Amino acid sequence: MHLNLFVYGCGHHSAAWRHPDSQLERLTSIDYYEDLALLSERGRLDAIFFADGHSAREVDQAPGWSVEPITALAAVAARTERIGLVTTVSSTFFTPFHAARHLASLDHLSRGRIGANIVTSMWDAEARNHSLERMPAHAERYARADEFIETLIRLWDSWEDDAIVGDRAGIYADPAKVHRIDHAGEHFRIDGPLTVPRPPQGRPVLFQAGASETGRALAARWAEAIYAVAFDIEAGREYSGDVKRRIAEAGRDASSVAILPGLVAYVGSTEEEARRKKAALDALLPVEHSLAQLGLFIEQDASGWDVDAPMPELPPASEFTGPQGRYRTILRMIEVDTVDGVRPTVRQVLGRLAAGGGHATMIGTPEGIADEMQRWVEAGAADGFNLMPPLLPGSLEDFVEQVVPVLQRRGLFRREYGEREMFRERLGLPRP
Ligand SMILES: Cc1cc2nc3c(=O)[nH]c(=O)nc-3n(C[C@H](O)[C@H](O)[C@H](O)COP(=O)(O)O)c2cc1C
Image 1 (tube, helix red, strand yellow):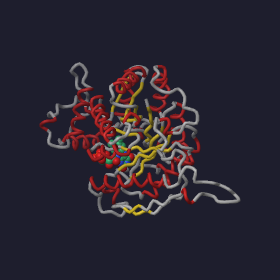
Image 2 (image 1 turned 60 degrees about the vertical axis):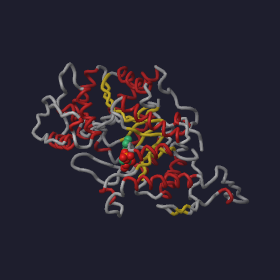
Image 3 (image 1 turned 180 degrees about the vertical axis):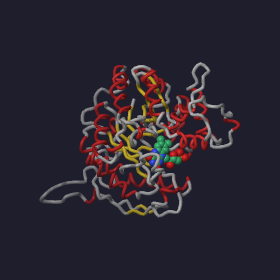
Image 4 (image 1 turned 90 degrees about the vertical axis):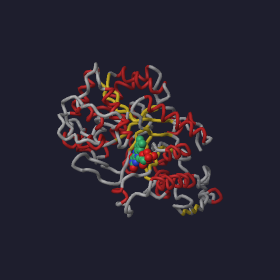
């Protein structure tokens, strides 16, 4: 299976930064990110991944996007040898030429370890940092993303592999092997060629993440690996089955496109200890703010609720008139945490929502978690996972030191990286 660390602030639990073991003071220090990458490399993970956004969020509630990922990955590339490095690039705000240069340069700096998660940004607050009044409509964002990826590829291909001659007495590069792209489309006009020679991988690996019809169609056309959201095996199978079918219909090899759902894992030497780790983070949640958020999702006033009392009954999804996806996930969260007819406390539900929201959550011993991961993969619900440790670096250390060895013993995960393997080879992707 493929495993990838999703780097995010002090961890994916929204109260992680409040925890005494969080590395709050290091969020703008490069050694924090280097250490996380080195730890991931020690665990032989496929890659580390930075998500990204272009607006400051509720700064009183969480640290947000502390460093810009392309900048951070350039430094991390210098300190690491093998781990893949995946950044997020907004197709809404970048121009393809900017993105192609940054990514090709990083691919050279890292000797072929770069991937890019191409997103369509979502928030008006981001649009207003980029000279727009509001976000373009969903379909418009995806149309731009499609043309964005097409031109990225053409720019990376604008230098042929053997374009550089490097003859001191003759020519540097063969002009016949460095091509203009002369692109004139709906959103972009680009002459090319790129300023940077062909990346070591040919093209950095293209990741994508998007759940709608249009999002899945874009993934089918271009994605070489996919970040997904699936609360349980059933949701993972639905998504994976559908997207792989679409990839095959687009005439591509679906088996080589890894689908990686997010995974929030609390690891303990006993199940009890794992639950205590979750409870310690849940205890740090600011109650008023968390209840207000829950209230928005379930369209009820939850402000007076006792967080340590059992979660009140919610109406079935068929009677709920608001957005269904999140609501159904909340119903499932209550269901999976109901033990012997005893419903979870409100705080336990807030804690699940606060760490990863609708992503898979596994709480247990290393063996128990490895069992569950194995079930997902064997059921065709995932080709691996995008690890979302609730607290960094602690939960990642737990995972690398305890769960990875179990997966390795079972032959489910690599013990070593391949010799001189570039990132795309590790994912089983052909070199374009
Ligand atoms: C797993 C996942 C990760 C995402 N990561 C980012 C991100 O880092 N930055 C961002 O601006 N958008 C991110 N997105 C948003 C998507 O690019 C897209 O805008 C959003 O999902 C809406 O499209 P959809 O309706 O197709 O899902 C992510 C989406 C998913 C599902």
